Length: 317
Image 1 (cartoon, rainbow, N blue to C red):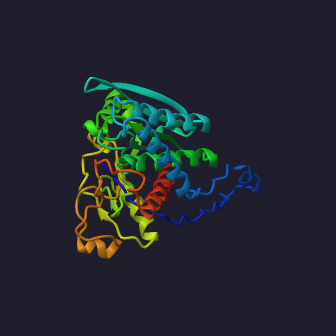
Image 2: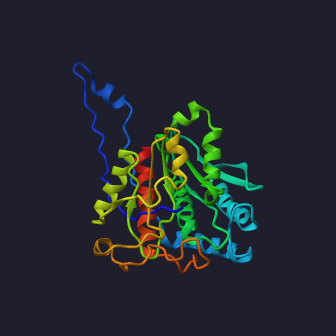
Image 3: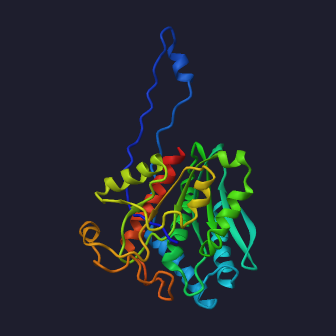
């Protein structure tokens, strides 16, 4: 399945004010620890996100036209993402599992620092179906999450909470990789995840702007962002429970995410809000061979990539 949304929001800088307690001294106030201003999320480069998509397309083309579970194209996709993260200073690990008689892999990347008892995760599935290269489904989410992680490294961001990013295998076979990860965690480790953000299909060519409504805090974070862009959103229903947030939600982890639409058809009311073609699917190439780099709406991909960074920064400070 796939999920999306787009956006770009404004973040106000917080101002720290030192207040002297009655009977205290100026020296006491000067020695008190400063409260850092809130850090604004960076702009995520559409050019960089599309460069990742081009690499995933090249990988698929060189490996039978797909990047599916258990195939060479998936392994090459994982190797590409892992190499970028390793070079940027992330601590990465590959988790193995088995599905349909083939070995599958999840990629987990931790950014050093932050409170290990409060983990903010952002993830996407990296596999495609066997019938196509899976550039919108789900190269779009995978590339945007990757570029957000790289932006964390480039900015030297040191959040209060611990940041973890994930790329799931075998989602197209029934959320196998993400379920294997959640099941591998003990109850104490699951309880440390303060939020999981899922991004599956965020560059649909006839896009909508859909927000998951599973957790009110995460939902409001995304809605506030899009409101700042004067972009109307709708609650995501097409992919409800059909992507990698489901195993986390079932385990009691707060979840949220974005979606730009799959094979449901755009209504006249939606076209009035978002533009596009009435009566056509949000993604006419869903699970098809035409899901290539030509099957991406740049505006939706740009907005959603920026929305991912905004939520990661807002929820991890």
